[in-house]
Image 1: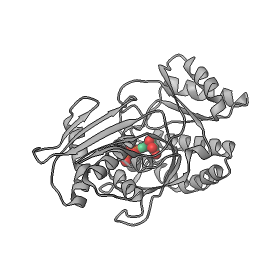
Image 2 (image 1 turned 120 degrees about the vertical axis):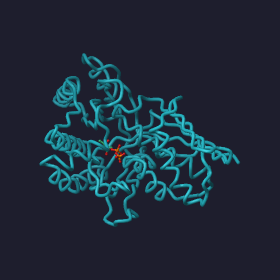
Image 3 (image 1 turned 120 degrees about the horizontal axis):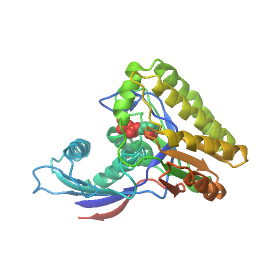
Length: 327
Ligand code: DP6
């Protein structure tokens, strides 16, 4: 059988950075994100009894490491379906891969939905979120659209570690402006960076302990559509994560000069009364979240910064979905 799915990346406002279990990819704390609408991953999966191995084409290329990771992920679905059939997977992003734009989030969310469709498993969104988490923690959130919260859970088997939707995109539309300050793949993957933080940062435990309070504040801000409250808690959470990363040995410095220039520019816009805030993940790109009416002003201001190579503009969008199914 044959199925294709689409999903969008999400941007965490309350960050996931740290695991309580590596094998099941369980987060050490919860997280909260917004799903975008303008950037997409499209993934087609075809199970084929004639194949001896999985065949994975990512953005037109075959890569042994990606094939291994995607094959291991598909094993979870094969086990559910009670089959061993190998698959052909074709996946493509319409945005830069591996540059701190969470291509693994939309990637594993789209793959989960496509694999479920191709095998006819009919899993629930919650079950797909749990499975997507095994591919990448942030992917659990891209199963859903709009505002999404990921639960850390407490169970050792991970059955309570899944994402849930908080609010639809249309209920509180926001704009997102992404300033690309570096092209190409980041230096240290999220996975390696999380491990290094946990093992070597003197602030790791404080960071993890601080997340539940930030989640309470962010959840309340979203329920009340309180932009200022969401801005304050999101910036504080992002900066606390980066402060903890800076204290790792060796230090994890994901920013470049243009990253800091963007932060300063956004602070100047805030001083001028523009409703915008920044957040930064494991890379040097800056994501500015704003009210939809401010998007053009924010994009213009960030585009004018030397070192900003490109600016992407998005709104908030829906969750991962099947776009085609045959067989
Ligand atoms: C900084 O989901 O890529 O973007 O579970 O190891 O695959 P793995 O990590 P990943 O980490 C995302 C980290 C982040 C913050 C976030 O999206 O919450």
